Image 1 (spheres, rainbow, N blue to C red):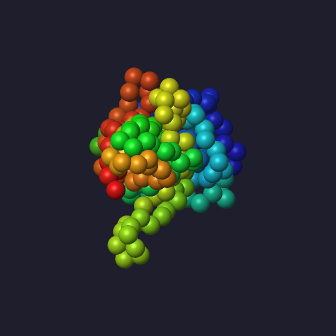
Image 2: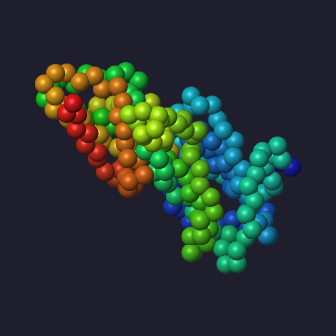
Image 3: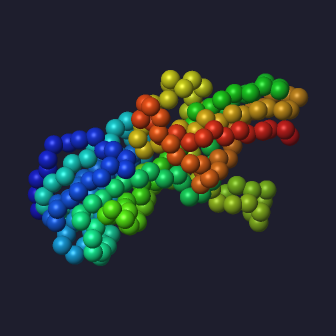
Length: 226
């Protein structure tokens, strides 16, 4: 069925959207396209991945009548009474720690320090109604996984992420699908440190929004002593 949409708008985290039965809200954010459809008895959610090298700076959403393509895989959720067609989208941090690898390793001098600004991939959580009933959640790009540990028996599964590791705050792009974490690296050793990767406790980091509309987490300090 051909979908007829209203004008394109910028998407907003935590905004209170209201749909009528038969309407579909379409989002393009991060490396996915998302369709959320309200019917009389159910909600439907569809996703389509975008190219993994895409790095969009915007979030666009539209609301229209009609159904998305039947070729898209769908999730179906029975409606509960009282949701009134209200839907909100909230950002969340990754549920696993994240191993960060700079595209270009950095050398930190002995007893030196630096601050890297790291863009963390976000998950989208969908909530319904005034009571904010959780519907589903998913990453806004397909995350890679890696093993971090002393050996194959001791360690944990983590997400893996490459980063430009920008050293200047003003150089960090504002992207609604990523949250910036300032990471302070302290080299306590008596010789230079080649920084090739480090681990961020992403599930423990809270999310905040600054005056620029950018999502942030509290800073993290990494001490390198050996």
